[in-house]
Image (cartoon, rainbow over all chains, first blue to last red; front, side, top):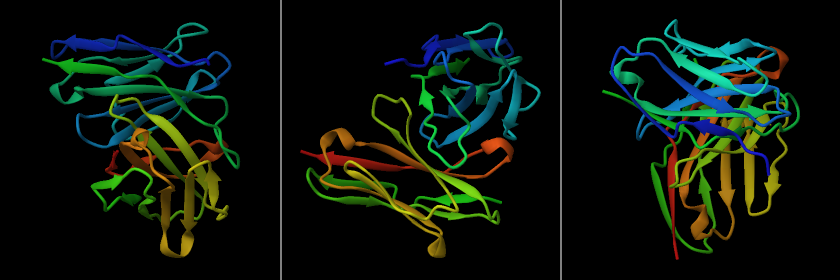
Length: 117
Length: 117
């Protein structure tokens, strides 16, 4: 079964450094998402992406964050100048459709654990 | 503002028991989506269901069932004949229905379900 893959599984970065988290969505999916989960806390939506542009973003997704689909397969999340509070598990997801009246399941990657020192 | 309350922090059951995870939400939107996600001990996220606010029909998928009650603003999740593999944290989420079927989910704090053999 096709799956969403995320690399790396664990990223350790010094505060203030830029970090890029990579995701390869399922090939025929059109909608892409990033979520994060600070250790032991609830999941938070960051951004959704469709047709090469951001479709929705949360308040967390400020100017420090950006997303890109640089080629036909990768979907990346960049954090420009990392802060300690960016330490979290970051999940990428993709779906065939956006939803509406039918269930369009999201498929999640295993996550990237980002640790900011 | 939207809010999701999962009042049960942790539930412990013995295998084969039925268990219901509660989710109560608050929203001023007339059209919205409700979601359930599962996070097993391994940490990945698994999408379980998305339900539209105009569709109050209950849904059953194998041992899983969902009871959507607009009158009480609840979207409860029942696992019938629980199994050890059901042990996980379960998150309920809510989003206003946005243009094109997109969404920005707000998550509850999760309910940790422990199923003992």
